[in-house]
Image (cartoon, rainbow, N blue to C red; front, side, top):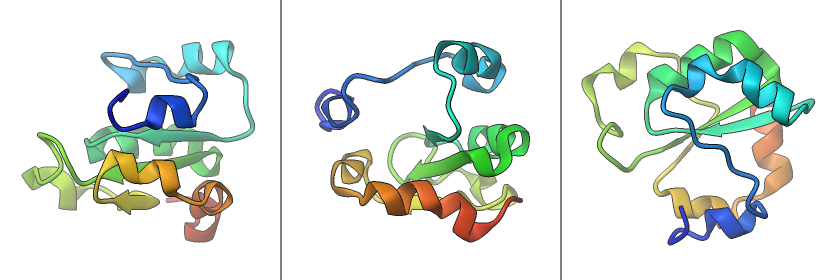
Length: 107
């Protein structure tokens, strides 16, 4: 995350959990917000959190890493945003990123 520039791009506001889909209450308690962005290379995680948070969440799938081309990718709903590399987020238009979930509609 540090090498990609993402940590600096979000001012260090990053939480890392082993099973993030099970820690949503903790995320909301620590950082209450009207909208969240979740970046993960596992589409099953993105889908699970999207099911709970709906339009309050923009899901971002970087097509890199161990799980980026796993066989189960097509079995889950498509993420709101797909990028080639996580570092691409440093130049992504933030309003467009936040609006991606609303444009796509809740699954």
